[in-house]
Image (cartoon, rainbow, N blue to C red; front, top):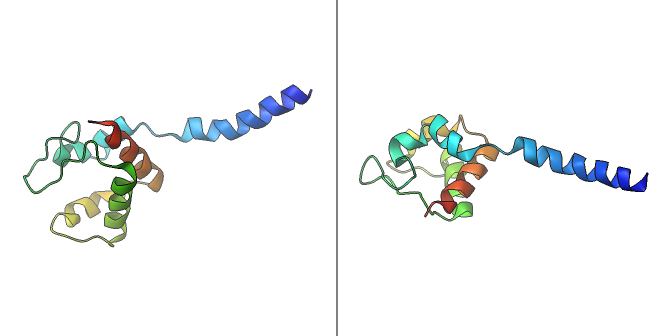
Length: 103
């Protein structure tokens, strides 16, 4: 009985992480990141757009959140801001982690 209870408790806590984890590679295309940053974040549409593959995940996550909130505003921010309101914080985190793995 005790083992069953432990298994249940562990399963309850593990389930939300497994179910809620978005597929960042699909998000990258669905949220149109690919249009400006290239298929793998390494071929930007314009020379002044950043290559984002391999970027430090916490840094990339914060930049996306700052653009979304308006805390970061530069020449490229308006294009990003128009899209970032469609991206949840969970999706931002998943995208940042995925981009960091692309080298």
